[in-house]
Length: 412
Image (cartoon, rainbow, N blue to C red; front, side, top):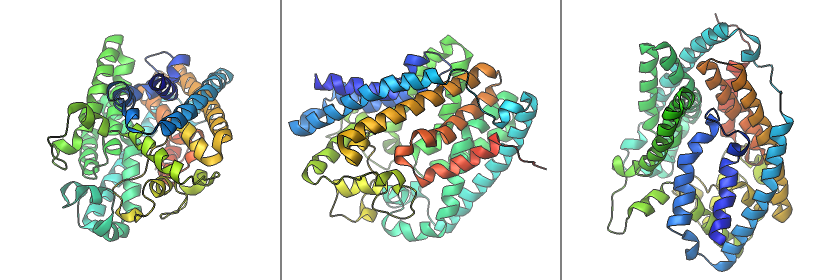
């Protein structure tokens, strides 16, 4: 029964959008299929990871998820219903489609060149490339001996990376729609430079998202192929570090464990709760704004979760970027049980409301390029509002970048 509750609750948070918008055009939800298979189905159904943890921890985890899902779903549906007919006054709402597309191509070209140049200069300034470093994982996280050289170019590196990660789907769709060889070269150059960082989601997510958009909108046959393809891509992602030689197989490895290790969220969450039960440090909402404060601020969500998991270790030496907690668990560690209710009710309503606006945009526009900009705006602008419970300074660069697309500026 516990596995069923965990599985169902996590499915509600990951796939509730299909309840209100069961369509191929619900592109923002399709990528969750691959992630859901790796992060939810495998550890719960196949590996039954909960058996490795104390009953009290499992009971708390189950109760938090169940209450969160019960609070989240009805308000998600309510928010979706209340946004019927709502739209925005963004640039794509007021300009003719041809004019907006021309403007988008010009802006994307400028930003791609800036991002590519910025990453190349950053690697040169750091003096190392994470993929080829002696300790690739430490280099990826810019820990230990890699921290000082990284700090010299941190602003340029982060800005350039987030520019490319944000606009990559748009650049790919421009190449697809106009068959532009120039944009293909820009995409390939950006993809190579980003992959050097070993950040899998940021490096390849834009290309995968663009493929998802194209195949979802093309036909039902392409959509079915896409669903299997997405699962395959996430499986390959789990083996990424093995493929490039950062990790090697051992006699203790098996297919399902390696697969689950590629996105070990549930195991990490259980480990977090084990430590939290021994030393319950409630945040009282300070992790809502903690991610906006530079440096290793103690209430930064990543720093906070690592401090619970490894309270006696130096954060700079821990080979992790933090633990991804589900929404209701963030509510619980913030304001206990009332936090579970408040976080899930408010986030559910906001997510449903803004998803309906995205659906309204899709009904309005025929251009695949404009639809791609709409999806990017949904993720960068509305996504920041939806995820207000875990604000992060890294939300800001994509937000600023997409504002250049959706507000009118003169580019000469």
